[in-house]
Image (cartoon, rainbow, N blue to C red; front, side, top):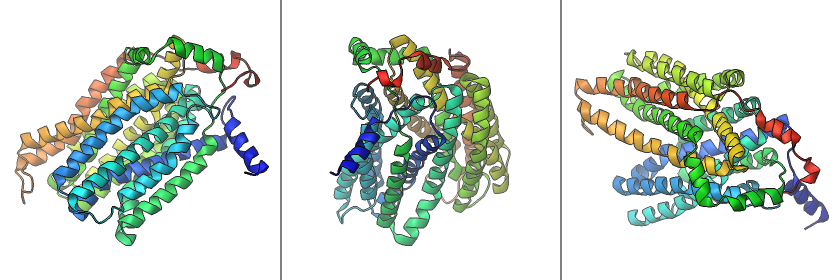
Amino acid sequence: MSAAGGGGLARLRDRRLVGEPTRAQTVAYGASAFPANLLLQTFSAFVVYFYVDRLGVPAGWVAGAMIAHGILNALLNPVVGAASDRRRTRWGRRVPWIGLGVVPLVVAFALVWMPPPLPPAGLVVWFLVVVAIYDVAYVAVVLNVSALFPEIFRTTAERARGNSPRQLFALVGMILGTAGAPLLYDSVGWAAMGLVLAVVSLGFFCWSVVGMVERPVDLAAVREREAAVGLGDQLRYTFANRAFVTYVLGSLLLQSTTAILLAGVPFYVRYTVGGTDADATLLLAPIFVAAIPAIVGWSWVVRRVGPRTAMLAVVVVYGLATCLYLIPTTVIGAAAAGLAVGLGVAGLMQVLEVALGQVIDDDETRTGLRREGMYFGANGFVVRGSVVVQAVVLAVVLGASGYVEGAAAQAPEVATGVRLLIGAVPVVLAAAAFVCFWLYPLRGRDDAAVAAAESSPTAGDLTV
């Protein structure tokens, strides 16, 4: 390796952030949300269709493989989070995981869409192996990127501002993962689609490294504190933390409402407002269109009133907005309701991670440790339950309304049941989330972290 190359790597390795991040760092860090959501949305939306409809794998087999995928993903979150918190290198805690995981992540994603010519049983084995690699790499990369957020941005104001470009990138990734992927696989095929999205994602991840800068710490003091707090104690402190418990239960309820809403839209379009399958796009598009500018507005709200009050406001807006789905009788009317729902979705995207950063700051005052990985991992483990809530609620409501799978026509009660599914059930869950956030004990904003940082030793006295 040349001296110049070695010097460049050394500069990259030894970067440390003191003070506020620059605008370039903020935007670059936020860019990581684009590939994370592009890959996730494409995989979630189309992988079952690809393996069942295009490859002919029995639906029950694919369902079993997806359950295994969900369980593995949930279990990996706290394990990787805890390991990331306690594994310190000259490159920092988070950056090594991200650097080592990005290439396996995009390669595994591409391989999902280019299986070899195998019988159905062989395709299931291929799916399980490749998706296991994808899961491990995805959690390693995305959890550690998320864990950097409350470290890079230290106060409510910094986090609200820094989260805006991140969530805008996330929305674009969601939109392209939903609408762009079908255009690609329809024109160039599934394998080429996977390859194109993998290459694009790799490029964005490489750009985002510019913004992934950790802060200096007193390594000797931190290791002494870590030695006094074992993994069992860390888990106990996390799940006994009232702020985290109220936060994560409220987050689970709100994300369950979103999962139910998205799953119920195709049924709502067909059986309640009399549209075609293609009209589902007309209901989903306004949600994203309204959310993009609303993210900036919610950033102002969070900075103005603090995370707790902002969470309560988000729940009210989101709950009232979903009620509007009780009214329309046409696709256009339902699309108009989606504009209001988009305001609530933007609030969820903006405020939830800002609030989790506040929980992590509060935990540091109790334990003397920055445990972002553990908290984001525990949060990821719990909110995976939204998939279970969605499945149970969907099955109960459709069953109670008399829905018959595959029937050419459904009973009139199905239209009412589906209307209640996306216009009333989310309100009930949102009301429960409101109670959780009302009990959330951290009031106001979290400027103490900056005060502590400014009174700590200078960067030159610290090591990582």
